[in-house]
Length: 503
Image (tube, rainbow, N blue to C red):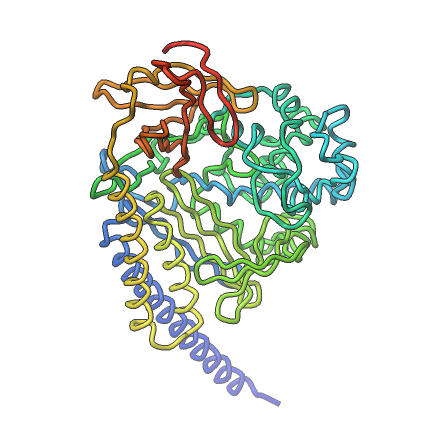
């Protein structure tokens, strides 16, 4: 048995051991942070994103959170871990978690048909709402064709009322691929309609109450009007040789359940801590045991590659993928001027957040920062050589984007009609109004509610223009009868718009 002196010596030795262990851990963490800093600074130095916010959670604790570059280059406002970025499709993981929480409390039944919640709502004759469940809507197995009035109006134009959307559901026919997994927004949009009908407060307030308040995500919101404008990251896209500020394409009306929140690295690290610990943050169980885990279980198979990730299944709101042998759950998002990477490796207890405001050219670098962090934490060899090569590859991808833009700019910008002939308002029952105007520089501009952008000639001989309303281009074809001096209609997104007036 230890005497008093022996116990004192043992306690001293234990204290020294703890001190050395803690000191080594601190040194290791400092080295990791230094390496992340250096790599992210290399990405910023490419000039292909104004800013990045980066965070890491390990074993339930935030171990890294930092901002780089500018949230707003014009004002000189820099990115911090508290900067608010638009998340786009990362929202799907929030919506699905909210659904699982409601189901756990018996407030909804994920395996009930959508017809139970949208009583009397007409669907397209090719679809049976009695055979489509809420779970089908959340797992992309509903068989409803996307890119129609419900998803377009909620994500882009913002021109709708709840009643209008319910009436427009019938214009979405069955998808060509049937009930096979097919990722899109429309299932989440129709699910949110079901919530809006079932609960008077609507889907936004439901997620605020069920998800963000318990998790302490105080800055995350589906209302742009509630966000501090001095914390919002501004969007940029590559234009004419460099990054240019673009219009902030989101307002309260087009923040939707498939892509409709702004959040910060600080908030998202709390979210990932709960995801890695089945609803627990620190020593508190903030969400019911088992609910978070239920969203991470595979619901349907998929077989897609996304950059270095191979996606094998879909849970509730999460892509389930592999990265060099490790399981990784992820939900990314992109929209004009923004890209979000939110992921975690459940078996490793590690989660990573990377947010950028550089648009399409920054997208590959966002994932590159995340994989670097995972590889560095997992102690993979030859990181310098590997990531020198990967940076080169990403620059080549960006070069391809630049080349495509140069090709577009080289197209003849002429058509058989003068620009003024196209000016006017065109209307579609499905997608609403599209207004074509001439700006002060004489360029054709397009507006559909909140969505707006410039038009460039795609094929003048066919009266075709390329329009960029949400960060990606689409072709508009005008209908010009023989001998006419102005269009009578146009075709866009598989819909016909009739000319109804002059601007």
